Amino acid sequence: MATAAQCPFEGRDDRKTAAAFEHGVQYKPGSEVVRDFDGVKTILRSNALVQDALDAAVVKRMAPDEIPLIFLDGKLHRDRRKQITDFFMPRAIQEKYEPLMRRTADVLIDDLRRNGRLRIDEASWQMAVTLVGELIGVTRGKSRARMRKTARRIERFLYRTHFHHLTGWRLKLAKTRGALYVLDFLVRDVRPTVRARRKAPQDDVISRLIAERYSEKAILIDCMTLCGAGMQTTREFISLVAWHLLENEELRAQFLAGDGVEQTAILEEILRLEPIVSTLYRRAPEDVGDAGYEPGRSYAVSLRHANVDAKAAGACPFQLDPSRKARMGDQGGFMSFGNGMHRCPGSPLALNETRVLLDMLLRVPGIRLASEPTVKWVPHLATFEIENVLVTCGS
Ligand code: HEM
Image (tube, rainbow, N blue to C red; front, top):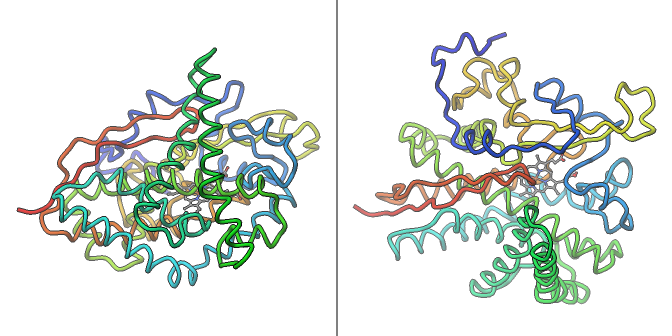
């Protein structure tokens, strides 16, 4: 087995978000941090452990059909997950979503050509909202102007979670504002779609949930979960990949010359180095029995560390090497989409929309990075936000 010590480029580190992570990382107090690849995999695949992300203990006290998918365990989780998995089948992605990916990329590239400049970190939000919004149903058939308003409403309620550092009256005010943003999304986006789909169902998540007799509140919660899990992550992923490819001419040429499989290998390798979600949490319930875990123990599972464990990643684990996947077997993005029963169902959508957008964007003549992007660490979500990814085009 290759080790980091054998790396001929020892010291080379291609990560752009590592410093922000080192500086800002926080783990849930009292949790045991698991960093090695095998340990991470074992925990994520264990049926004896339960989800312990964010405010899991509070969320799990809600009515079962109002608990977001990601917080469910066991049979409840399996039954709920079934409602969405077929939306992400390869055929659905290719036939239903790829044409929309191309149309959306065309619109964004028109903006770039017309204005001579484009903020990728804003364009990536439009791309992510359009695709996941289509899947849910809330952006379907909307004009660009209406879509922008929906995107703004979603951005407001998702990013309200940034009030974790506040206390006292500031916290109360931020929570009230956050609740109003959610209400706005319900009234202007979710409720009208629910009404329309009750009359004429379509092939989207809202129609599916109506058919399963979910309450309006449960539908709202599922929509919010998909927005958070699918839009925020893909936005950062697109910005991250664009940054890598715009800065590295050789890699960009390799990407543009590659077929779908080769392009995806490059994306997965970037995601291995810089997982959008760095840490997941699992907990051993009090009645865990003899599964080998201490009752009540919480585990902070570090995908970021597991992905660069030389035992699994091979030599030069901090180096961006698209041939790694072929060398190391079919691990792809390693743990960046999780593992086991909660593994990300949306990964094919995220990879494809990023691939399609960048393949079209990077072919615009004279496109170049015209700013120094910045990385901000968001400790309570164990993620980062990339800003100021400005590109210009022309001679
Ligand atoms: C690059 C983009 C993405 C990344 C890095 C990502 C990452 C992840 C990770 C690490 C998990 C596992 C959470 C855990 O085990 O606790 C997860 C779960 C999930 N993701 Fe993604 N995701 C991405 C895109 C998407 C998209 C586009 C969608 C849907 C439209 C989506 C929907 C979900 C859902 C619903 C879950 C919960 C699954 C479950 O609990 O069974 N994700 N994602």
